[in-house]
Image 1 (cartoon, rainbow, N blue to C red):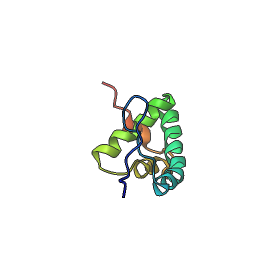
Image 2 (cartoon, helix red, strand yellow; image 1 turned 180 degrees about the vertical axis):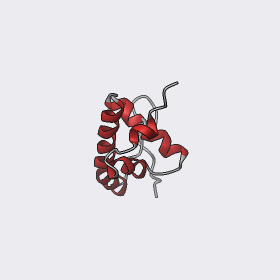
Image 3 (cartoon, rainbow, N blue to C red; image 1 turned 30 degrees about the horizontal axis):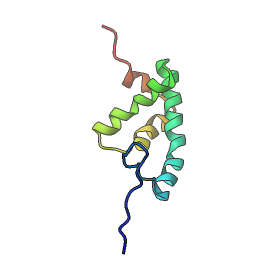
Image 4 (tube, rainbow, N blue to C red; image 1 turned 30 degrees about the vertical axis):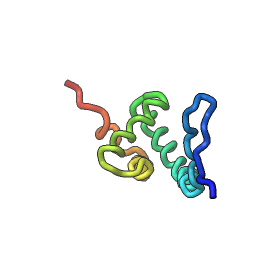
Length: 91
């Protein structure tokens, strides 16, 4: 009986595991919500896509919530109140 070993790259490092079909399916379902939220953030803050995608990520991490759940809020409210929540008041 042989044990399954992870694939090794030419550099000698272990190849990353493939995503399970469940994880891939979940990503395909939630990606549009994250993309819509990024578009709303881009519009409200006037930033590029990379910066907009970075807005919900720390909220997801600090709140221990899935990124799609955090991204759903501005999509559901169509961005109303987002500027108030994200833009710091002038000094």
